[in-house]
Image 1 (cartoon, one colour):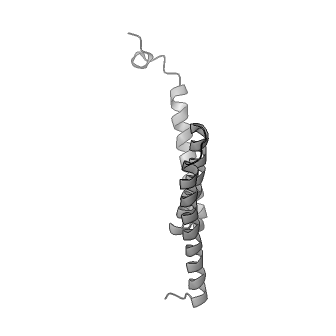
Image 2 (cartoon, rainbow, N blue to C red):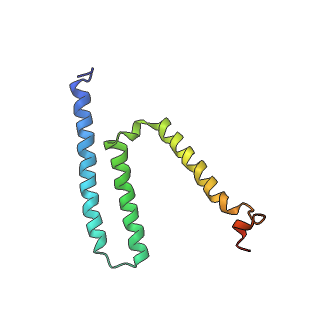
Image 3 (spheres, rainbow, N blue to C red):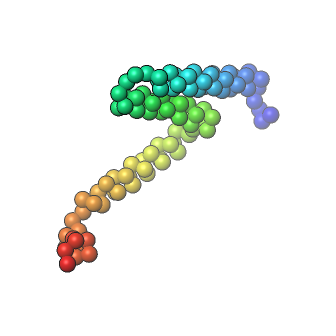
Length: 104
């Protein structure tokens, strides 16, 4: 089995079952939150918070991203760089070019 002991496998199975149970509970919390009588803004915030927690659990444990720290940080840095570039592009001074100035 690739050098995995019975104890290691049972520990991994226990972690997966715990995450699965947490996802089931959070799904119930999602249904319960939908029944709350709150404003739309608060409902969206609650829904996004629950979905973020569930997505993080799935990504970290079932997609094995919890052990990929260097790759995650590299992708995050690259994403932040491209986000900054895309946010800076409209701020660039393009008035000298008639095609972009809107004037004829």
